[in-house]
Image (cartoon, rainbow, N blue to C red; front, side, top):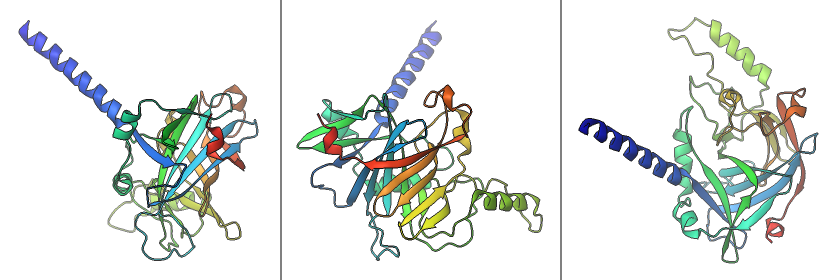
Length: 294
């Protein structure tokens, strides 16, 4: 009896500890709509996108300059970026005042550099959880009646002609702005070659190109780059941080303006069943976040 009681107490204690860990796992990214006190924050953009069925998703891109000392080769003002995709219920995005300020401030990210390092060191499996919070005239605001999915990118500038190969690893939290474009068919062709190549002492794993962002196209006039990634695990049926979009259009000094997302239920209902697996969302207009505050 005593042993069973002790085991019961241990289970309950572990449960409470797990709940506490889950409560503290939520981290917040604070963005001031007034003059920012964060020197590394260089700008943000908030835009509305829409698909062919008029479903709307809003994109919130937050740009930082954390460590860049030398001048950007392509005049980019940022070397790191958070991106949040806000899916409003009813197609209308809303902000509301946050009352539990202490909880937000206690769990707010204070060191973006540390976050960047954690993301870059993450393997193919992780459990990050970030949400955006806005400050304006001494008050905090959050998005309500909406599902929010995020991602973050280290914006690297390293000249790279050949596709990067890393066996069983991932760099989905990194965009290299100076890669040569490769379409998905190019990468698949390389994968087939890797599978059959026995010329070396080591037989390379076939999925060494998956989980990495490749450049599909570059528009030098618009200063935009289209990136794509093969997000294998998103097909299991859930979205999570860093596993939402499979293609993005990144505009230098602005952020993400267009994207593709794998259609998963319940965010995409029955009318999408006959549509392609990837749903395209196109830029419609920029939105002033201050106008959303009631």
